[in-house]
Image (cartoon, rainbow, N blue to C red):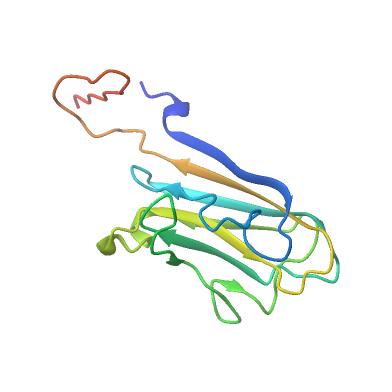
Length: 161
């Protein structure tokens, strides 16, 4: 029997952090990438905390890359008036949230894109704009059968159906 903890991974790339106008709670462009390898679906939950009423979350999208260092990064979702995140009606108040539902096949797998991250920005930042983000990755309950000797510190799932 597979345990729920073996099928669900939750990470908090950042919590209640002032985005300072740009990026995802850090100026380092390689922060907060998470792998989609072996994942069936990832939900990315983003919620605004203390937020300046004069500001809007102008950009909110998921980026994809070929490594955890952000190599070759490009947008997976878009932020525009006609994009995935509608910038004509952005979120802009404490408690407002966005949920992105991402599957590995949504990525540019033909070009080896395997990692995602949330990117958010408020270009007209006037004061504190706090934002939190959670990645919830779901793996298969029925792991593919593997054969061969187990390797130390690894997990072997054997399904005899």
